[in-house]
Length: 164
Image (cartoon, rainbow, N blue to C red):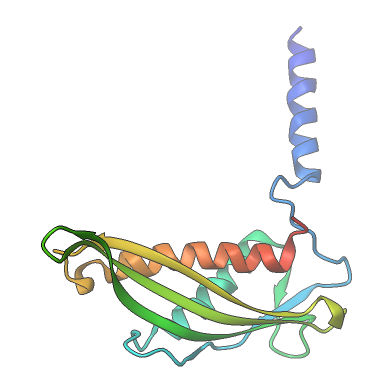
């Protein structure tokens, strides 16, 4: 009985190494990637935001794929522009006040596949973070940017590397 349990556990571990539940599908001929420094065209965005988003995308690809970073003749490339960074009022309340503010960041991403040009694309990715209107943006900005970046990097990664 004990051997059967060990065999079963070993089989599960072996099987899980061969199959990805994430659905990542990267052409076997693609081995390298490059993320160009993002450009910031949005008003009011933190000066370091473009660099942070580019680094977040590099880290996402590095940790969740087999690809190797290469800035010389990469198989795939990402270029990004921050096009929107603004706070809007949400959830109006009686008396012309709002209960929530929303920080929205939008990036325009170009995915260049140098192995198969037909797989390249240009898309906008956007996400938001809601916070109480009684709270100053500067007190939640780092947390908001992290939350937004995490979701946008997931969306960009999925658009580039999954067939879902």
